[in-house]
Length: 357
Image (tube, rainbow, N blue to C red):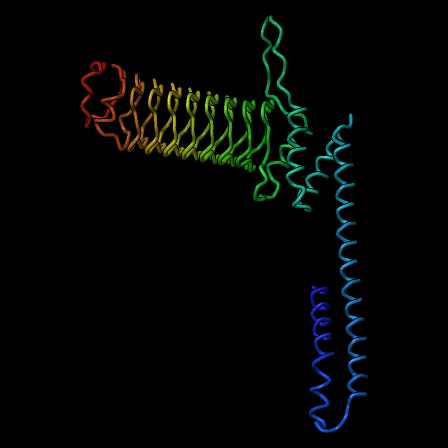
């Protein structure tokens, strides 16, 4: 701001050198010769302009020096933080992680690099475990991530949102038992990531890619999975109560025994998905695609199926007594058995066996 003001004054002074003296002395006595006085005034104004130009130059140099010093300081902090990540001491590694978070917040231009480095740290530290040797199975208790890996995940989930900077790339990482509740991993890459038993309640995963991810037994109540890609994802026994899966793609996903009570699956694509014994009480499946999906023994009480596509959908043993939005044409192309329960308002499709007594 100071540079702009000084520059403006300098320019105005230069203009005044040539325009002001004639005006001043013409107004005093147009017939008199004021050339000496005019020259003296112009000389003074030129001196002032030169001084202001010098000030502007000094301010510009000062600003460049400060910017250069700031960049040097950030580079030094970054180099030191990255070195700390490789330490054998977990306290030192934690210090490096939090130093990188500070850099990302203070220097927006460096956030992309910080995200890439921290993501790589997680992938390296949380590699998939080797298969256990054959023998008697040992009961495994709840697993917790190492503190430095958990800290890295935490900062990835709370960094500022910046246009063009993705949240994380945790492809193939084993994050069993991770705690990411209420974090923001929108548009993150989580291909084949293992999130078994993870605490992900209210997690934001809008537009994220979780192709082949393992979310067995994960807690995702209230999570935002709008437009997420969950092709071939394993959500067996996952808790998705109140989750938003609007527009999510769950082609060939495994949702057996999953709980989706009150969840929104509007326009979701569940082609060939496994929803065996899933609970969808009061869920919204408006305009969802369920072609070839398996809903054997699924609970569909108060589920809204308005406009849902049920071509070749398996509904054997499913409970649709209180389902909403259904029309006869939808059921005619689906497959049911004697245990499939329908409202008394519906006539069973002719292709279905009679209801069990």
